[in-house]
Length: 228
Length: 228
DNA sequence: CGATGACTTGACACCAATCAACTGAGGTGG
DNA sequence: CCACCTCAGTTGATTGGTGTCAAGTCATCG
Image (cartoon, rainbow over all chains, first blue to last red; front, side, top):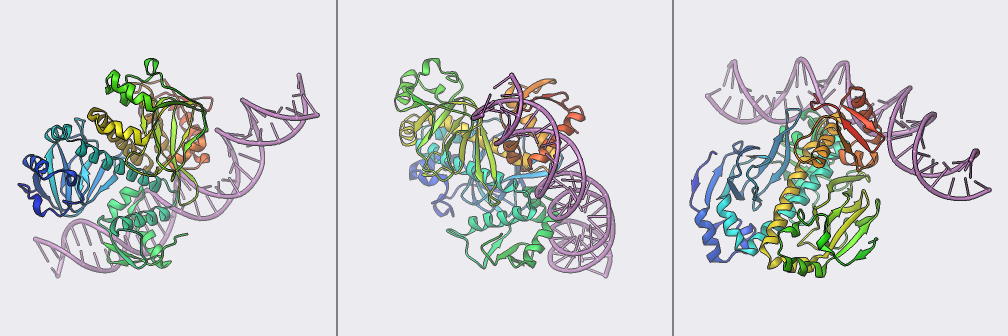
């Protein structure tokens, strides 16, 4: 594991109201803080790999990570994204089943898994909160299944852009909204199950048709809401 | 909701040792049983639809269900499978995000969501158990993302058959093992994101290449382990 | 300034979607 | 009991979309 580690400073935490620890009392949070450490991760750095021992769980304070595996064909397949205020970690298991790497620079709040489970075991509200998050992650994963199962590359990209848009604006997706793409083309292709070339072609096709407008390679503007 | 409903008989329940309630004491289980009902569901019947109010959660005693949605293209996309001893239900949410229908005749143990959550709130072990299950479901969903993201139809089918095989035998997949397919061709295609025609062609191709042998349309024998 | 890497574009082959016809099993009704 | 219907599954011919290989552009960095 790479990156700097520091003691926790919950008082000025950017996600203190949205993360799982928000349900804890001050005292309970101190207890959790005592076993946790803050870490930074630079874009591209890997936090853990599929098959590693499950020793840690964490809250993302800032940035975005990708969850991936190497599939039977030998190519990296993304199986999920993790954003600020999300919780990440495989509790009650000895191994993690995915790799996690930073797409952007990240700030994390890391806890040893065993210690976290111990604290959780007599904090029902925390357990319940983690459960609610996990159910939400499951729902998101099913969104992804539905998205990737689409038959046309265009449909996949459109769906993905809308999914990103919904994640970035609270509420509904506005027209002329700027979405930034925290993933490079290779990661996007790996997520959607297509090649970078077709992905690139679909970007230009969508632009030619007036659905989107590219802002460099890291952002797009959604020009229209309907995507028949 | 269709199907017959009866009082619970936990004593002779087929999944009493594997379902979430296995962690409960006799007394706790009685408490749960008091709010639960046993139901049967015939193959093809729908339990609930995406968007319905989330009023119930359940344990599958026998049979298999599919979780599905209607995607942007208007076709049914399967997003998950639920087998015997699995727990199903969207806790802490007012709406369900998927439809659930029986692939085979099913026997279910159904609880009102609110009542279940109430009992859960002072049974930490139960909550923990549900959490562990949900994490396992999340992992399974990611398996599915990886599977469906594969580029060749053949790879998808092979991966799916192996996934089914692993679910049906405890331990590793043996050669010459008979796998039964609880899904029809249309559902399988809807799960893998391909058409029934290509699916059918892949079945015959795999058979011609000697990987599998069809036993009617509802079962296959895996003749070989490696699938390059 | 050249090198590197990410992205785009082009040409082509191939695989999968589409439309259509055929087979076989199960069910109904005469 | 058999004719007929229906539906799931298979197979065929064709088209279009996507993968592949290759080259080209652009920005960043040493």
